[in-house]
Image (cartoon, rainbow, N blue to C red; front, side, top):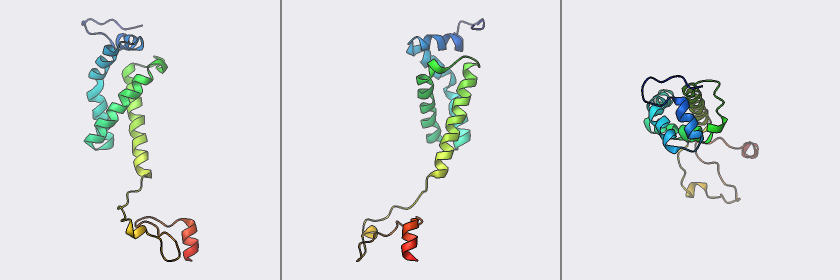
Length: 134
């Protein structure tokens, strides 16, 4: 049940119900209501403005696609906060697993006289390459 709203602005619950019914403007109102807090949380966690903006857009897309799964056991803003934190954590985990290397020239990756292709610079040799080198 939606809480009484003394102002003439719809509650989150009212907007959510309308958005679930296909009212895109109701969802746009939710986005406008929460875009600053979602961006701010994303920026605090990621420390990069463009990444925070991109992720905030992805978060709202995820939320829109997941409206039917929102059970209403918590307030919408609490659920949105959890989605935001989880997506930021996923992004941070993804960053830790990506190895940043310098691009190699194609000539440096040409096979040697025996047809072996060298490992790119800045990259650990594969176990097979290490065994062959030993």
